[in-house]
Length: 359
Image (tube, rainbow, N blue to C red; front, top):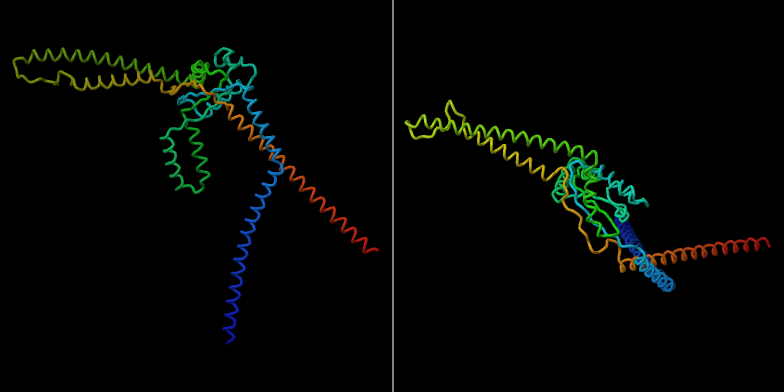
């Protein structure tokens, strides 16, 4: 065998050894993970068996405390309204709700009653206020399309998400406003005061007043135009009668326009357009789309707060969590004691060896 062939065979053998070592190392790695996982499960099982009394006792105590809490805490009822206004931006809505929430947290509800213009007894039953922007399906689709278009221009998806989220918040005009009360029979009585609270906001009320004045002035102007058009139509009818008498001896054709008359079709078209515009303005004045209640409060018979079963379940979970925390702390302290004992034994052994050498 030549020297070259020997070198090739040795290289081939070393490659096989390296691959075997690599696969062996990978297998050992995964087997160690599995083995450690099994040890962890066994440790948990041993801890549960060892502290089963503590776990059962704290779990039962948690369940009992949860049930007791149900009987000592009042039921809280929650409902919401859907309000739309082109003048209520996200910041104004957040500021208004925060103000109501701070007043609701005050023990003296007199200021809340003054703000909402309700009785103090009703204000005392209010627990909290909150809101969230209402996003329709069409708006969601539009934002998703816009987001996909941005991806072709911007590579950083996090920046796109922040921009789209901010756009979603800043361009909202519809909001779902939540209220929580202790007495559900008072929910309906709070609908009108809450709407008036937002409607009478200086920023909103001024713009609503200006919009209403503009619409009324425009409606009045159209009414005057319609009156003039009606007068013009009367004159046209009289004119046609006179033209008909004058041309009675002529042909039987009807003359709609000549040098002495106005085309009646254009007059009727303008009258119809003005009337349709007047109806549109009356519709806007009636609907008040600039500030509109889409959906009012609904009184639910079931409270929003957790019931007996939920509180008992949550209490049991808290008890089990507390038991787990105690077991973990106890095991950690025992582990520290073991390390301390090993360190002490090592120091004593070292001391004895040093003394033995000296002797």
